[in-house]
Amino acid sequence: MKNFDFLIVGAGLYGATFARTATDKGYRCLVVDRRNNIGGNIYTEAVNGINVHRYGAHIFHTSDRTAWDFACRFAQFNRYTNTVVANYKGELYSMPFNMYTFNKMWGVITPAQARAKLDEQIAEGFTGTPSNLEEQALSLIGPDIYNKLIKGYTEKQWGRPATELPAFIIKRLPVRLTYDNNYFNDSYQGIPIGGYTGWIENMLEGIEVRTGTDFLKERDGLSAISEKIIYSGMIDEFYGYCLGELGYRSLRFETELMPEIDDFQGNAVINYTDSETPYTRIIEHKHFEFGTGKGTVVTREYPAEWKRGDEPYYPLNNELNNKRYADYCELGENDIHVEFGGRLGKYRYYDMDDTILDAMADFKRITK
Ligand code: UDP
Image 1 (cartoon, rainbow, N blue to C red):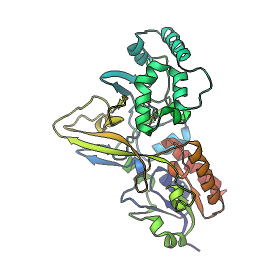
Image 2 (cartoon, protein in one colour):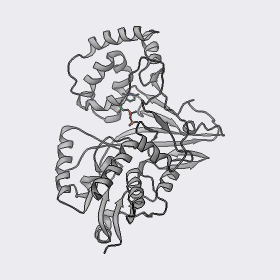
Image 3 (spheres, rainbow, N blue to C red):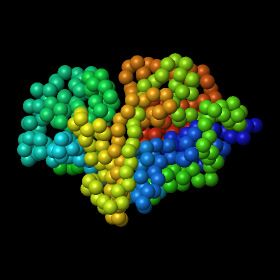
Image 4 (cartoon, protein in one colour):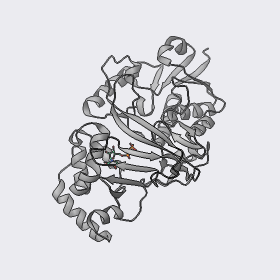
């Protein structure tokens, strides 16, 4: 009999949810991560008393009661509601697209006026069936907003023309004919008080975790002590890139402590939507927790091309990559000792709630 039922590779949200769910049902789990810390990309670290989101800002939001209840087992969530400001060459707009945005863009005041203007814009923009992000955006919101708030940001973020990107990416953003500035449509939203690292730590309570442990370097030894591997890293790396690389988008973060400035930008997230500014957004971390202390910490987020050895943040879900991913999955299906999960393992643009639900569903399927 092996020491563990599940060896879970990756101590991020997927791995922690799987480990917690399995442990609660009596399975023996070992979690390993090659980083020296738990939390994966939701890892936060206190700097000057401010929880800094080291691998990009995360705001938990969901409409799923199961995901929310699970999240709330491990931390109390604050009432943070994401309201984003877009800065286009010094002109400020509300995000997502709502009456404040339309008022600033066109001077309209009522929803009926905005609807009429949007219809006019869409007729000018694109009226067919959208087959890429640009067409999708033009058919949703028209050229004025597309050109100021979407095109530059999107092409920086993804490093390719919007005509070569999948339409679904832009469907993440709501379009509202109300003065509601909430970035998300979900019923529940917030940030764990004390930071995400503590949240994951509580999720992993009583479970053996080995950080600084690279599964791919200790593959044989680690595989031998566990019945099954739950792998939340990159599937192409797991298989030695034998079918070629999947595409990813990476990010570079420049974080700056400003001890003399108490409030740098007045909001947690400001997007820079022009094409010249090299970063996509500036995050001021203290605003995620309504911080009022002295000093502040800001992070500029620069999108970057991914190459082997870089951190992969976003899957590039084009046709070629999706097909290649499906081929890797076929390899995976013949390999009964391993299951893949999470944003990297499933090669999907998952939000945190999707990740939790995916881990729960995977556990159920594997153990049924
Ligand atoms: N987006 C945009 N302008 C913005 C913010 C977002 O055009 O000011 C587009 C862009 O294509 C981006 C997508 O909307 O990739 C999804 O944005 P979201 O904020 O959900 O991205 P994430 O926070 O996951 O990076």
